[in-house]
Length: 225
Image (cartoon, rainbow, N blue to C red):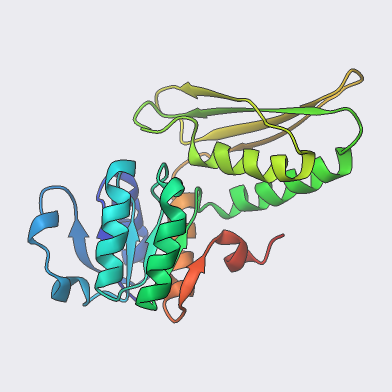
């Protein structure tokens, strides 16, 4: 698989290393320094683009890749309010977009477990809260993962969930869902030990997306509810 990396920070470099180890070829490494010099023809040498940049750059990056006719996997968070119009753009371009607030396989199984736990406790007097901790370089707060977790549980419980965010050095990502009642408290937690899970999930999504058209998420890849 030929990959273009759009955004070459810590995640981009991590994906680069793992992709090379897996026998894939990274044909382009694009960041703020060379973004304006990369041509559409160069972009089209890739089978798929993996985008990990910044919230303020993600939408323009996605539109650029779609205009080149290349499938794009997006790991940047903080832009989802513009997903409806980008979905229309994907349809109009007959393109392919795979987005996720978190590409970790473990986190996405965690979402499924959270949904099942909330469903089991619905109507039993429980209220939910979320606490998330990330590294100090993370731009958005709450994290995209925390927002997805809240959405998953809110769909079941029917009430808004408060999120508390912390930023500390060298924390890849920790999320804790707490369900409290007057009787007891249940906690469901996920702690990432490194960025490897995110990188491997993004590569799995890229391989899965190559021959598809449309808009997809990790639910489609994993077949979770």
